[in-house]
Image (cartoon, rainbow over all chains, first blue to last red; front, side, top):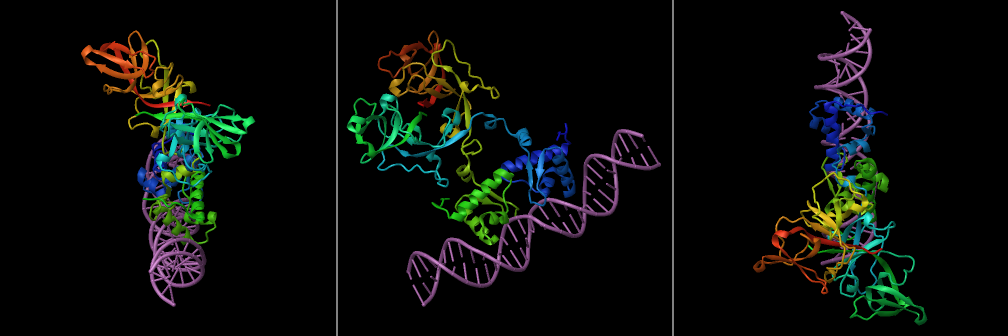
Length: 228
Length: 228
DNA sequence: GTTGACATCGAACACTTGTTCGTGTAAGAT
DNA sequence: ATCTTACACGAACAAGTGTTCGATGTCAAC
């Protein structure tokens, strides 16, 4: 369906109004609202112009449905401000689930309906993350155990839930029975049947725990620090 | 307006339906459509639940307006696949202008429409930044001069162009004649009529330069590090 | 001068849609 | 036992909204 090269002044005004109304109200305007906004006194004239715009491919309508007008994607693109919309990447909202060093395993559930305050999530651009980002979350660092890796108290780490046991040396958030959740590099010591959780702060001792007393909750993908 | 911690099953279903309907139809559903979708046989029960959801802050309604239901931003964010469309925050594309330690002042132009390759820009959520974000850019750190501040080689710093001279002790990117662009904490030494650019790596010496030979290009807002 | 396409308009009507009313059940508090 | 609140429901009504009709005007082509 080819588009008309030029629309009438009224038709342009109608499209712009629909776009702006939708942006502000989350819904489409009624025939009468369009008429008021574009100074068309008769609903049948609005209807006639809408019919034309449908023919030209600028919008679609649902019969006998209140506010059943929807701009096509191409029409929306005509009006969208050249901002976020123009970007390749997408913004991921990463739940900030708490601080490291907590008393029990952090609940990482796919909880569709849990509400986060603004302080409870971190925006991260998708292209700063690796491909599979289904299971990511953030934790705020509480302590200095990883300063050798340039991770400071108060920093935010973005983690990916891991299914497979991570390689030795991977920086992870791990829950340890009796210790809580800790940020360390993980090493297996099979001969002793234990896990070593190694801080990178030379003044701190590693944590040793039986394998069954450790739950790896995620591996570190990114570190974020706000300085201002 | 405080939000209820948990909604009823029906209320969750209503919210989800409204979100999905809006996404697919560009408009909001009617009371009757909500009822059909959530198997509520009476419009007054739907109306009752919508009233509750308004009270809890999940949506707003327009009186006596067909399809006059709009999810609040926070509610939309709950359902949005973590995408740009979920507008709590917007994604800022911060130009990655180069590496610190370059031969001449970095050109920071307000170029709204310039397209950057993926390697040339960094996505940052707006709510991770302070209010005025007109003039921000990113630089990749090359070197170890700021390891005392937990900034490592290869890290990315997000900076804000500063008009006013920053306070002593502020971490800045500064261009120094004969030295290039460097990341340091800046101090003025008025008696000697010079600027001291202080690394936080104890093994490194500060840079001293005449005031007129130093251009502060930005102050550090954020540090980002990719580990995976 | 006639014809057809396009555009406009008010009014009426059909249908969609939101609100209110009266009633009922269940659970918890007093 | 009583009261309050939450939740449910069908029906009726009020208001919003889309569609159609008949009339009118403009303009270009023939």
